[in-house]
Amino acid sequence: MTILAAFSASRHSGAPLNLAIQLARTTGERVIAAAVVERAWPPRDDPVEVEYLSYVRAQATQALHRAAAALPADVGVTQVVHESTSIPTGLMELADAHRVTLVTVGSSSSGMLGRVTLGSVTERLVHTARVPVAFAPRGYLETEGRVRRLTAAYGGEADVNGLIPATAELAAAWNATLRIVSFTVRNTAAFAGTIETSAEELVVQQWSRRTIAEITKQLNAIRDRMAVPDVDVVVGAGHDWNAAVESIGWNAGDMLVMGSGAAAPSAQVFLGSAAGKILRHSPVPLMIAPSYRRS
Image (cartoon, rainbow, N blue to C red):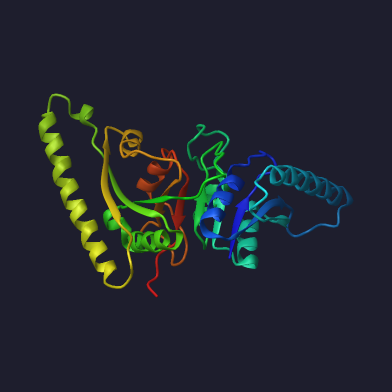
């Protein structure tokens, strides 16, 4: 089995490679570090264009070699430079050709350091990928450890694609602990003078109890057909999305997992609106998985 790490030769970011190494330590899979070079379609027999493409490919190869050389030597990494009509298309071509189980990508260079931010390539990839996609926060350096805890971001009705059973299976396979969280944003400032703080807290408490009861019901149903590791069920609440995401606490070795939204085509990933807000404030690597299909 294989993890595909998407390397950007233009940004020279090693974050997706570092995340791939950490995942390989967790799963025992091999890593393919890939740089995709964009070419025109249909191909033209233009000497200038051919020479330019050759130059870009050589530059990408050199940058990939330098990045791979900095990786730990105990994890095998195969390097590939692939030509395609676009980077997302090229990554999916490689994913199909090598039967990869997961693709790791980096964050936009315009995003905050230590946070996940989608760029034009990853925005398209996340809506077309047929395999799970894991995002490394900008500047992610972790390679020595492994993934020790998976946190599934439960979205209630948006969980029609089976986030909880999918993450439970993954946690068992990765020998990781499992945490299920549901986030709520209650902007009490917007109701200043019209609602008591105690009343707002009561609303959150009642919502939390209902959410935990729904999650517990799902877990009990899952336990009837598969082994489920010990699970922590928590609620993250705050006055905005950043406060809500930060409220539950994060450790080294954590990964946030989000499921495809209800609009996702079968066996593809799709990022819903709430998921996009959570993604932008995640302080740890984040994975979006295709719809769960019960075997």
